[in-house]
Amino acid sequence: MVAYQGWGVYGGGVAGSVEWLLLAYRMPREPSTPRITVWRKLARLGVAKLGDGLVALPADARTQEQLEWIADEVTEAAGEATLWRSRLTSAAAERALVERMAGTIAAEYRAVISAAAEARASTPVRAQTAARLRRELRRISQRDYFPPAEREEARRAVESLITEAAVR
Amino acid sequence: MRWATRAGCHVDRAACAWLIRRFRDPGAVFVFVDDPVEVPADATPFDMRGVELSHHGGDCSFETALRVFGLADPVLWDIARIVHEADLADERFDAPEAAGLDVLCRGLSMMLDDPAMLAATGPLFDGLYEYRRRALLLGREPS
Image (tube, rainbow over all chains, first blue to last red; front, side, top):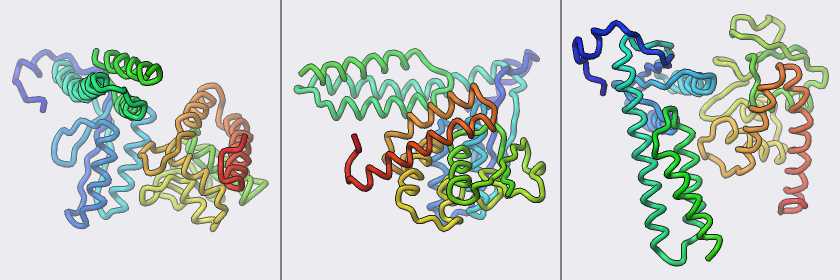
């Protein structure tokens, strides 16, 4: 969470430069299935959770379309949803949000990197494991809006695993 | 008949337009709008928020259109699986073709305006239909 840090964050007067889409939504507690489905879809898109029923993604044609469909799904499930375009009033707060999103994704890449190392240690390296990690990597990179250094490292780890699985 | 959809067509809209022209209305004329309020009164909207021929219950518009038009052709439902994954990538189906179809449609939409996009993707879906038809008949991937 981006904490309100008084002058530290909001005093500079420099606004953020990223345009964000905010989805504010509310769904009935029961039935829980539509609520869980919606949350899974949002998680797959890599949203930043800003609060209860408030998530953010950087705006582009794809994220807007995907969030519009999810907003409709919320409405169809007797919920309420509004989609907003906005900009942070503080560049520092924006940096914190971007870092938080990149940090979440970096952890996902690190999990792939260690899974690849583990698979490498076992012999023979199973082609299935390598292929599964490659799919996982693709899934992660689809929700990677602010690529961290781990992205390239994870890609190399999985590719060399694939090569080894093919050789053995 | 006139049919309306959002400008900037991608895979789901291109697939719906192909479906409409080939299986519903050979003389279909397509209108592209930026906002739902711009849909002409005599046009049937598709793949737009809040209309019948759109995303519903986790289905993409192509799947909804098959249901609404009452099309039971198994080849079309097979294509629906691919379009769903190309559009939504929610892994509801195992459709390895989806990633390729998605890239081809994205690339074409970068070069072409909407009418040209639909003209170019028509043969793409014709080919996909023929391929999946043969695959279903053979019970394996055709060579």
